[in-house]
Amino acid sequence: MNEPIQILHEESHFMLINKPAGLFSQAAPGVPSLETCLTSQIKQRDEHHGQPFIGLPHRLDRATSGIMLIARNQRSLARFGQQFQSRKVGKYYLAVVQGMLPVGVYEWEDYLRKIPNEPQAEVALATASGARQAKLTAQVIATTATQSLLLIHLSTGRMHQIRVQAASRGFPVLGDALYSNSATGEVLATDTSGRVTQLSQSTPAEEPSSTVTYPSAVPIGLHALRIEFRHPKTALQCCATAELPERWQAWAANFAEPLREVCQRSRRDERQAWKFPLEL
Image (tube, rainbow, N blue to C red):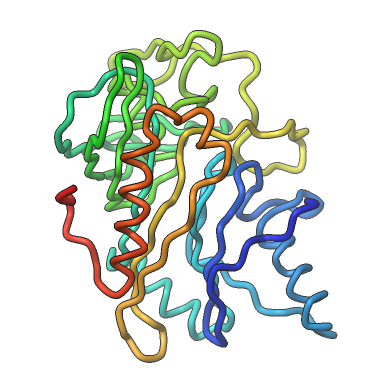
């Protein structure tokens, strides 16, 4: 990776970074990832003779950009892990999806599972092997005749959760070739259990494997905008925002004003957790 990882905030216990799309959070040995790139960057910057501690209490999909919380020591990693496990971390995403979804607030609840031996997930019955509950709240901020802008509060953190839940309802994330037809934007056919029954031949791998060759991941219309958590030492409320990638200015031009408003709101509310849905 040529560009350095953008560090938004840094202290002895943790750092906050803005992950670029196209980079795995973690990967198999020899595959570039946020973890290895950031470790190398910190080691070079600080002239660190040992291996700096870079702990990931959570991950983002390869094609997703946005804010990530990084622990700088084992104790902080354990405390962040407890917060994520007990669902005390606020996770907010911006998503541009295909299709016109009426302005409003939607509660999406499904059971998802990873498809065996495939780098993707699917909607499944609650009783299916490996099925786990997936919950989110989607607030539709703006729409056009062909697209909708969503602000999403993620309650759980399942594999490709937002992408699967949106696509299964007929509103795939913009640019997501894994869960929609990349040429037409149409949702792939599914059977009665919600399993995808047709795949694009150009679909890139999303999960690291020593036997897979990785093409460049196409960024999708999904960005982790905001995270809310407790400081691992003081327990004070912390909130942080990751600015949108420049590419959003072009392919989300129809939503420029609402995007600006939401981002400004997030920066303004840096000392308090959001009450969702927002009043905009």
